[in-house]
Length: 99
Image 1 (cartoon, rainbow, N blue to C red):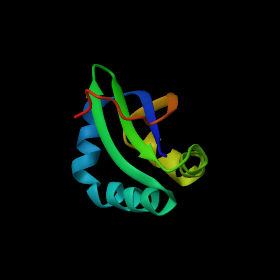
Image 2: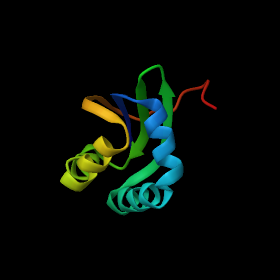
Image 3: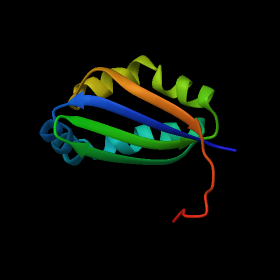
Image 4: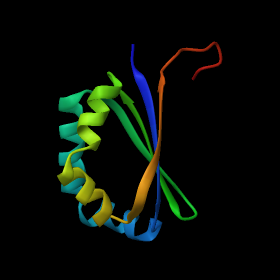
């Protein structure tokens, strides 16, 4: 069993995309830490004034441990996200129309 985690931040998308290019090594290091704590998949999406992370984790507690790290929170704020995120966690399920 795994869990899908959706995290939506208000933020400056231009600053975020520039940070991904300029600070790629930091993004990779955070991804490595996430995997070591139980992250299975990770992907970003952006829209008008927001950033979304779509993750799959082995369990919600692993995600909580990762996301509550003060260094991680400082990094998120430094790459364009602002304010507290909206977070949704649900048990991942398979469906007949999945692809």
